[in-house]
Amino acid sequence: MNGPRDRTAIVTGGAGGIGFGVARRLAADGFAVALLDLDEGAGKRAAAEIEQSGGRAVAVGIDVTDEQAVQTAVELVAEQLGAPAVLVNNAGVTRDNLLFKMSLDDWDTVMDVHLRGSFLMSRACQRYMTAAGWGRIVNISSTAALGNRGQVNYSAAKAGLQGFTKTLAIELGKFGVTANAIAPGFIVTEMTRRTAERMGIPFEDFVKGAAEHTPVARVGQPADIAHLVSFLVSDGAGFVSGQVIYAAGGPVC
Ligand code: NAP
Image (cartoon, rainbow, N blue to C red):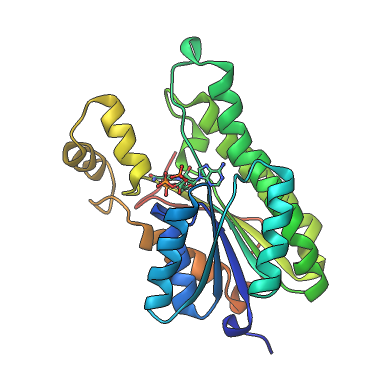
């Protein structure tokens, strides 16, 4: 039977933040890992760090919204590391603003990276997974899917990802492929740092405020999300599909 040691995982946005945490964890679990990120230099540094810890990793610089680049990158990964068995759609951006001030560009950018990117990546990877009769797709949604002031674009995209996930699960289940979404709460990354900066709040105060509103009395780290991804892509999780798991240190509403 195949195990992580014979399998390849692709993580988009894998050069930093949650994506790097996930890539590092999957490499430690035994997967060969491909980090697909806009910033090829950062991706290569992240891949080198994984290799120094004994993992197998490559970095490919791509924009996940570019159809041809996605196709070429997935084929390259299949050649260099082996057919992708796991896909984590993690690449993401925010372009926050209140509705009346939000530009069409900011709406389109957020839709494109989260939805078009996840669609293109999933479409390119599914043919390897269905041919192998085994695959795992994990989409990174957000608690913002439930609504968040100033994020009408982001919350719509993250809610859209949840519907996308459920439909992937319905279409691909009979081929041994599961699809699930993780909806993180506050995770310490460059994304949350940039949000604090934009709001003019020192990052330490921003983190402290978020922790005070979280039942486990702390904010999340990339490793918290990586742990859940590790479970969802394991062999034993084959009966868990089409789910949205909120990883937010408490219940969300
Ligand atoms: P991050 O540190 O900003 O990392 C996002 C990564 O995605 C970056 O490496 C970025 O590259 C890459 N990326 C952006 N657009 C891309 C594109 N078009 N093609 C390829 N790569 C692209 O953010 P994060 O906090 O780790 O977020 C990871 C995911 O978790 C996102 O989907 C985010 O929406 C979600 N999330 C985060 C939180 C949180 O609190 N941090 C909470 C809920 C959900 P560059 O750096 O080169 O732009």
